Image (cartoon, rainbow, N blue to C red; front, side, top):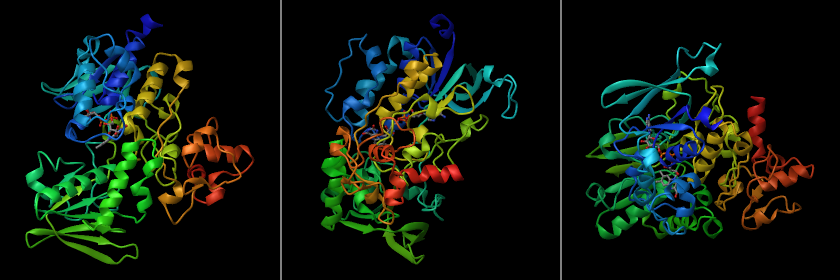
Length: 494
Ligand SMILES: Cc1cc2nc3c(=O)[nH]c(=O)nc-3n(C[C@H](O)[C@H](O)[C@H](O)COP(=O)(O)OP(=O)(O)OC[C@H]3O[C@@H](n4cnc5c(N)ncnc54)[C@H](O)[C@@H]3O)c2cc1C
């Protein structure tokens, strides 16, 4: 099998942490990776946030096959419990990995993949399709070029496609016209971008970790630079979800981030606008007036904003695979099988059941989207998830389905329950305790409200749900009416 598969080229799109891990797994499997990277360096997305300290320690940020490859060089592993910055992840792990002699020649920098297809087959043509190689059309320094590959692993992330400011998913009216005063993601407000934000009235939009990090950095800037003021808009009002699980969070730095934000919001330093659904930006007296709608449809305004940081997550670029046969979840844009495990509307545990090639498969045989792109629009992707995905996918491509199906992943949980996510609907767990009080939790559950991922049941989102269903109960959906089982039923009946 090894000699047969060694002829097979697998295109890996994106030399981010998950793309490079995929390449390491493919090499181990005797497959030939060919990595396309849009940027002038590897890890184009992480380069943008070099200054950001990750909340997961080194042990979760490195892939096992990559470590095996690095162990053949004089490379020395970092202290596993230390928290690196994104820049350190690049310098101390990804760059040495990409420079490994068996990988360096397989990485094509400045090769932006524009589109994918199958050789001689448009999307409609079926017969013989599965045997046809993929065509990878890339924009290169020498102009557009086409490459052929037996399989494709798409690890292009979501960083290049930030969500807009408009609460309805469209750019707010006037957002494009105000582009000079808007940054997306996590600009380095304490470093390279300091001058831009010092002494200004800055609005941050978003309720995730990037927004929290941006607000905390601005608060520090405000201490150092007089006149810096911070406003914060969120679409909802459930601060329990935003502030996170604190000490219950399996990643202590992630828990601490939320708690620091809580303290900041209580300090009065921060002007908080909850239930604010941004709709428009209007220039006014040299500043920007931000218009939004409240939950009752009333118009609300925030005046005198100089700069806006939009930290509302990202979305996958579906255009490159539009000539392929993909089956995507209707709202998350992940695969349909993965969606129920990660849907932020109902997913309560902050973790995800182990999953691999089966959950990531599309009708287009041998095309997989992995890494943060695999989550589509769902938040909270963790590197460890992506590393297990590519281990499974590489094994499946090599024909080792026993290994491919043996997906194993134990993620640190957020320590936040679904009832805390959404006060209007209750999920399967209540604050810190399983709602199904009669259900005996597995050992894993002792520190978490949902008991961690289910052990066996495909139709369960978490251990509490699983134990309830095993006991003949309906699980989360009936316990709270809005738990993790609900989505599945909705999508099945759709
Ligand atoms: C600020 C921040 C902090 C985070 N902290 C953590 C953390 O502490 N722990 C954790 O586990 N996760 C964390 N994450 C989440 C996640 O792990 C990272 O986003 C991670 O970078 C995802 O890796 P990836 O390889 O899937 O995608 P990316 O890192 O986004 O890599 C995608 C790569 O593809 C390239 N690319 C894009 N389009 C094309 C194209 N068309 N052709 C060729 N190349 C292309 C990009 O240039 C990039 O190099 C964090 C995310 C952010 C934004």
